[in-house]
Structures are given as structure tokens and as C-alpha cells.
Amino acid sequence: MRLMIAGGGGFRVPLVYRALASGPFSGLVRELVLYDVDPARLEAMDAVLNAMASEASLSPAPRSQLTIRTTTSMTQALTGTDMVFAAVRPGGTAGRVADERVALELGLLGQETTGAGGISYALRSIPAMLELAEAMRQLAPEAWLINFTNPAGMVTEALRPILGSRVIGICDSASGLVRRAAEAAGVPLPEGKLDGVGYYGLNHLGWLYRLESGGRDLLPELLSDARALSGFEEGRLFPQPFLAQLGCLPNEYLFYYYDTAKAVAAMRSAEGTRGESIHSQQRDLYPRLAAAGPAAYSLWDSARRSREEGYLAEARPAGEERDAEDLDGGGYERVALSIMRALAGAGNAELILNTVNAAGDNAGAQPSADGTTAIPAIPGLPPDAVVEVPCVVSPEGAAPLPQSVPYDSQLSLMLSIKQVERLTIRAATLGDRDAAIAAFAEHPLIGSESLASELLNGYEKAFPALRERWR
Image 1: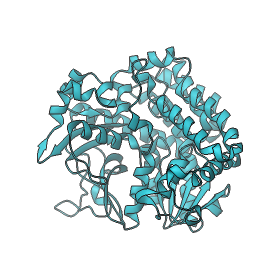
Image 2: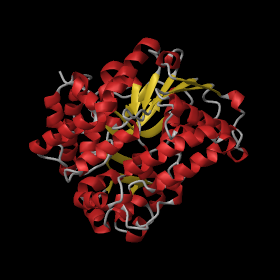
Image 3: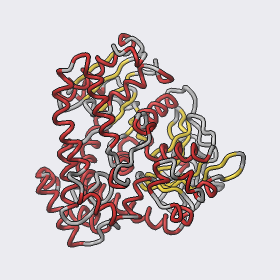
Image 4: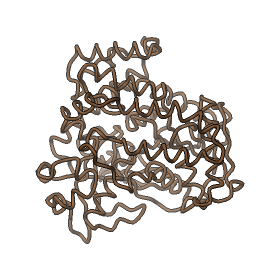
């Protein structure tokens, strides 16, 4: 199989290579093509992969078994490709800084995928991903697109008119939540299986509501056990009485909705934003990686661990460290390669993914009894909405599994955010400035037309090309 990574100079590319070079995914890919618009970033990542190939502790397959190419030509990258992983960041890490700062300066949440920052990011990432999707339709019409690009659910929905079911969105936060909760509850959860797991939501906005073993739901018992909850990240993130009353485990990003004031205060009191920290690190790191030779891998890995330590820091008490397993990496790439292996026919896999809500729209799902209406994975959401739910992945694609009816408060929040997503998609695809303002205004973390106008003015100033998109 020939795998192309769009955003091939991205910081997490070595994690994909590490997984491909050894372990259960070894031999899955014969050729890895790294595509990026920035040749300097490609040079740095190539240096890291070369160093990894000679790192005995990684026990990699010989590099000759996995041909690696780098290119700044989308045509060369896509021609003959079977699978595309996309993780692009238009505007780079400097763009992330602006996404955060413009919101924070107005007293709002400054986060790259949630709230104002997520809308701003989408206004840049959706046009870039539409360009990639159109190129795929022309140059690699049979290829699958596994989308990492944030905001992952919104971007995936924007691409469906071009790629249909051949685009699948991924994020590791939901699967990480399920894995950690299952371990805390003592529930065996084999790789690629989600038996007894109930999860519904949108990307970065979901809830684990069932965790069965032997026909018994162990989640209520876990939610009542403060000691067990303290053993993993999401259990510590939310107070135990709150979780017991809620009756489910929220995705970590729901911290920004359930405790917005605390999150904003922590961000505003910090020395710098998360984006500023990453921007500073990468600005200095990439030239050093390109010149580091055999030391490039260890230099990159040290930077990776430092980056992981700062993840969601505003939600943790001062001095609290992340769990060792979370610092090891292995989230996004494990999910993506599990999808790729299942699509290649090596056995079905059950994974939490971003795909269309109507189960009958995907391969392997059955229509309703009358044969005319697709079964919604999440009742109450539009059938063509992209949602984040457990899916069965086969060579025909990702088929969402029907979930329980959400609580009214959960459904209301999902419907509100889905409306924001669709307004943002309209703004990004059609150049509709009014839709962009409406998206900001209707987001529950903003809720103000005057703030919406100030936000868009701020983002237009930070990203002058944004003004050129409006029609």
C-alpha cells in the first residue's frame, strides 16, 4: 500500500513511522510519501525518520522495506496513492497563537478547537482541505482520506460532498477516554473491539454513557468511586459528585463547557498560551532537527514528551503531571493505522470515529424496517451530520453503530454546536461572511453578536487572506 501524509512535515509524523516500522502494523505500507508545502519542515522530519531507522531500541524493520519519499508537489504525492492521512495546519503554529489570543483578549476561551479559536481555525483549514479533496478526486479517486486536520468533525463534514464515505475523521481523545475508564473499571477491552461501550457526541464534545462487562454496566459503580476516578485523567478533571449526577464520563474537552470561567481564568493567568509554547518550541526545534544527524530522533522525542506534558494544563491543578501512558504517545496513529488495516481487508475493527450519522448511508449498515430511512447513530441529530460514535470499519468503509438516545441537555448542546459547525462550513466553502459572524454569535461559549463582530474583525486582522475569501 502507498500511504501519503498531507502535512508530512508535521510534528507527529514520526509516531506514524514508528508504528509502521515495527509491531502489528509492520509491512502494511510499502511506500510512505510525505507531502508538505514547507521544504524545511520536510527536511527536519526526514532527518528524524533516518535517525529512527538506525535506533536499535525501536527494533524497526529495515528502511529498505519501507520506502520513504518527500515532496512539495501535491500531484506527485497523490498519483498512485491508496491512502491519505491529512494533518495540515494552515497558518502554522503562529496561526494557533492568533486563534487563542484574539479570543482571550476579549475575555473568551482561547483554545484551538473549541469556541472562537475552533471557528477561526476551521475558516482556514476547510478551504485547504477542500483543495486536497478535489485533487484526490482527480488524481486518486479510489483512495481513502483519514482526516486528522482540526476541527476534525467539522472538516470531515465539509469534505463529504466531494469524497462521500471515503473520508473518515479521527481523534484519539474519545478512544483514550474509553481505554482509561475501562482500565479503571477493570473491564477487558481487546484492541479493535468496543463490546459493551456506549459513546455519543461530536468531535471534542462527547460522553461515555455505558461500559458493560458480562452483561452488566459498570459505569455507575465507577462514577461513584472517587478513588477509582482519581486514577485517570478525566476522572480527576471533573468532581466526583458532578460525574455521579451526570451519569456518564465526559470527553476532556467538555471541561471548557462545564467549567468555562475556570478555564479562561487559568489561560489568562498563564505566562503564555498553549499555542505560544508550541510555536516557540517548534520555531527553534525544526532547524536543529535538520542538522542533528543521528541525534535527531532523541531530540524530537524529548520535545514530544515536553509537549505532551503541557496538554490541557489549564484543567489540571498546579504541579499535577499527566499519566505515564498518556505521555508515551500512540493515540492518533494507532487509530489511523487500525482504520487503514481494516480498509485493506485485514479484519474488521471497532473504533470511535467521525462519520455520517445515518447508519444506512455507510457500508455494512442496514436500513430501517420500511427500507427507506437510514437508522441514525445518534437519535435527534440530522442524518447527514458528521458525529463521533463507535463504528465498524471494513473494506467498504466505516459504519456507525446505533447509540442510545442522549439526555436532553446533551442533545441540546450537540444541536447547538452542529448549527455552529454548519454555519462555519458555509462561511468557509461559500465565502459567506454573514455566516461566519452567525457562527461566532451562536456558539454557546460566545453568545453575542457584538462579540462575534469583534472576533471576526480580530481574526481578519490576524489573517489578511481571510478577507479575500468573502464574496
